[in-house]
Length: 308
Image (cartoon, rainbow, N blue to C red):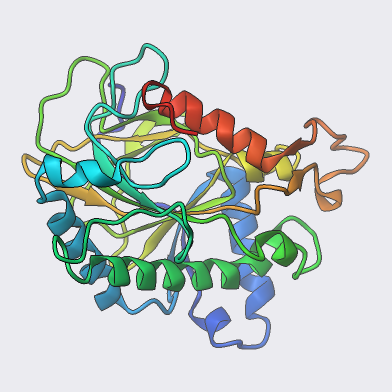
């Protein structure tokens, strides 16, 4: 695997002033977001207001969930119509080696698509996961005006497309297992959606592709790595990047990761924003319905399980 030797930190954006509604902070933070999305497609946020004990708690729940026996997870397997558990080998792109992870997926609290282990099996897990989901969704909604201004749109432009959002919480386990040649914890990909948040991990493993090769991310303490996906790239008329990345656990122990995927409603029509189109930047992207694109993406990522 091609690598840059040293771990590399991403652009760091402090949202403290913005979260406190200080004068000029919206425009200042939006300019930083614009620069990061145009040049990197990834950045880190601090000063986000999320209580870090809640993040540490969800990491603890991740460990406890994945410590359950495989058999106990078979009553809530992910399928084409349900969220839930995907075991090792359940994520594969085409004829590539399968990804070396197992994961639990959940959608909006209260959704009939959600499935959880029984309360007798893992009491408290469901309520903790739902609380964390709501916290991250509120943070993403707060960040939306920064993205709108970064795209030279009105600050409230995106709000209607995320009312409600189509957000997904993924609780992932990368066990300590050997990788074959060209095999990873999560295979090389760009995200399908709008915005992904990943909390600081005590075990490194995220790799990002740059113009000079791959580099490993050294996360800022108590931060979230934020990246854009294919949907934001298309919405911005290819102005913002959707950068390829992958994960590999080389720690010698277990690694857990808890990405939160924040996406628009499935009926959203994705077409180039007016703020990203001018005489020097003509339309280069065809419009599409987000739900249709997401279904195709999931079928490619989890083809052998029939998920959509």
